[in-house]
Amino acid sequence: MSSTASRNARRTQPPPVPPSVAGPKVTRSRRRLLAGLLGSILFVGFLLLGVFPTRTYLTQKTATSDARAELSDLEARNRLLDRRIARLKTPAEIERIAREQYGLVRPGEVAYAILPPPPPPVRLPEVWPFVDAVDQLNR
Image 1 (cartoon, helix red, strand yellow):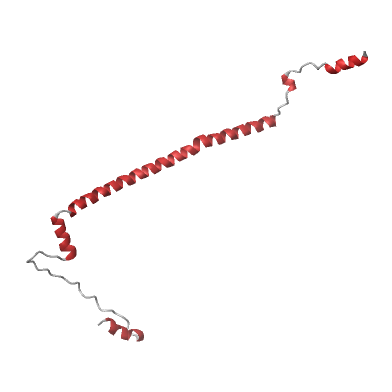
Image 2 (image 1 turned 30 degrees about the vertical axis):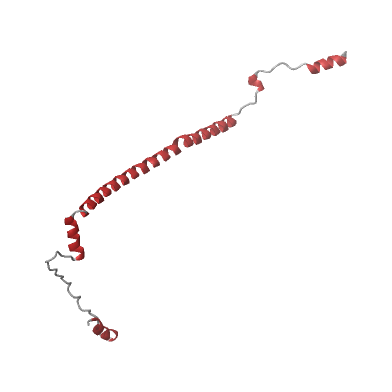
């Protein structure tokens, strides 16, 4: 019977231990480590979900406003060019350009050309290498 009693003693389990005593002991340093890790994860999550998209949004907003300003400048330039095109199609503007840029005149008119004054003579020192050069330049 002693062999049966020893078998039964092996088969019987010890009484259950309350969870507060049975679980692994969490020390302060381990709690601090877990809190730091959790804080780091939350901070990185905040950066990924909050800061980086906000920077992208602000960058895009600035680019959009710059593009709008450039568009308004280009539209104003196009309006000026449209007015110039309309002016260039008028006979008065064509005549003005023909007279100013090409020196054309109407039949019966006489064109006079006013020449610019001659350039002033070149002044060089009267020392050896320049003596002959003055004569050549002032012809």
